[in-house]
Length: 162
Image (cartoon, rainbow, N blue to C red; front, side, top):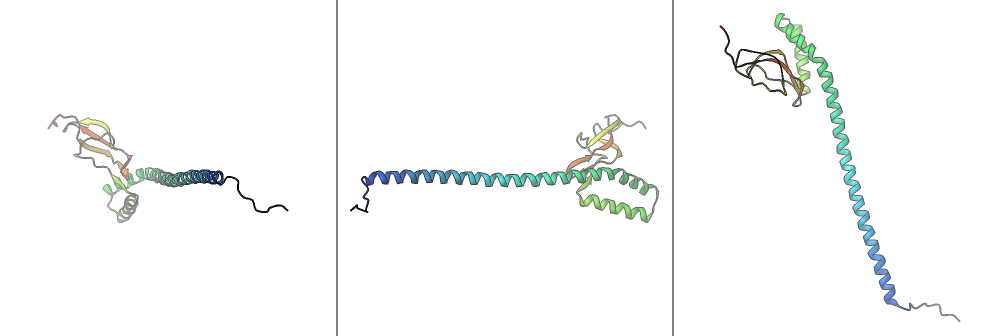
């Protein structure tokens, strides 16, 4: 009759084999955990990137529409100077409210120092050097970025002839 109980010949070898397998399993678990963490970080970064891209695309779309509206706003501003009409004033207020809603602001000009990023010089004239003495066309920024530079005349440092 055959003996059904199998007695390990060398239990130390089995223990060493199990320890080796455990160490390999722990190493694989560590590697998989690191891979999972990196994948989650990559996913988070991708979400942030796509959200930034969406915001930027939205900003450019808004900026392009507002750029197209600026000549109309300029014409309303000119009309307001020559015609005192409540209808023109109401439309102008609506247009400026839209600009404010989208964080569009006028660029400061008269009496301010020339700034090449915000102003476009059309000519120079008598007045304090590099100081804006006249504005031909208003400039605008949107969320702090120049949408359209102001077109200005800058002083050349000579006194005005009286």
